[in-house]
Length: 257
Image (cartoon, rainbow, N blue to C red; front, side, top):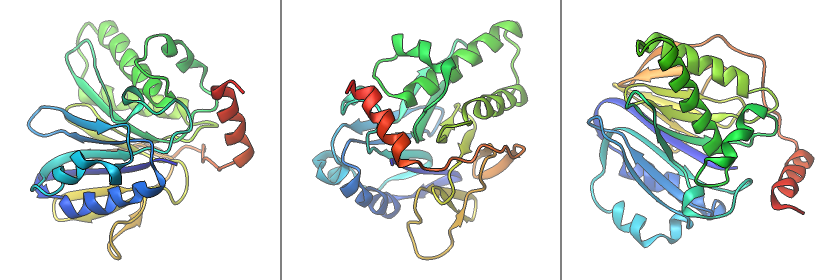
């Protein structure tokens, strides 16, 4: 599976050591790495379709001081889509209101007919990218229907409904950023942890230190603003259970074998 890292904080914090430990996991996740810095109302994406531990660029990047109040990182172990820049997380898309959305995903979509149409407009070939395209498309439709009046509560509510729609039969571990709010959802046990510190919350697929980590609650959307949780959705029932045979069939389907 892929691995995720994220942070939301009320100030800039140094994360070099956390990122170094996270990217060390790429020994077994060789299909790409990515970083998204989300500070000061801007989005900066750095990524390569190579194993993180083999990247000279990333090695040099981590030697300089890295401070951020919002960040996502991803290391990819491909299940759907070839190894290419366009299939490397994070994915970015701007909606019709001018809001920029950023997403990283750890999981596989087995059953989601609403995503199929987006294979014709995506840049790459991953199911992850199609999730983001669907989210932004739904945001655009709602934005038009509400005559350009679309407050944060409506936005969060729509994301919650989208998550509930996509979760059945699928592994939907994701982090999403909308320019203001940081969304987190996980539906497979033992695949996302958090560490809460003074004014900040750090997320990782696996704990990056020996102490201070706890599992992220399953099957409910959580939304953060500047390191503080501002929304926790009702828990749904769609826990994902890994099935090796199902994964093999999915791989064969996408590889055309």
